[in-house]
Image (tube, rainbow, N blue to C red; front, top):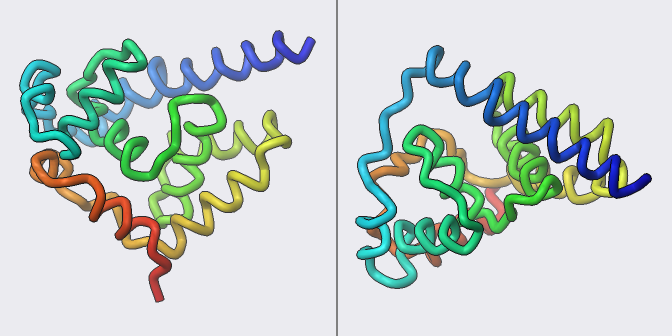
Length: 160
């Protein structure tokens, strides 16, 4: 029964992300297309954000989605995996980081309702986002050449 519930939760999160959020966001926000391909990311210097994005997607057999690359970069820099728990942690961080949107709110509410075993992690991610620098306005496409370690440290530090 637990496996069935877990599979259902995963299906709903994938639906919320890929069938609802992405198409709506493309219409509302008109996001910039990420100017790199998997092939160009593979050529980036080791330990750079771009190279880590390539390795992250390649290891998980995920495609590079041109309108969604900054989301995947957040997974890398914040250390939240692409699991259900990791996805809701990322969205909890974003909510704490004062980024309120329908996709963020929907995933956080869905996670809080259906994943009580992870509440502590979601709350920690929210608090981390609250105390972190604002990440939503970073120019993701311009920082991909840079080393990821300083960004990780910056996002891990408590802000006053």
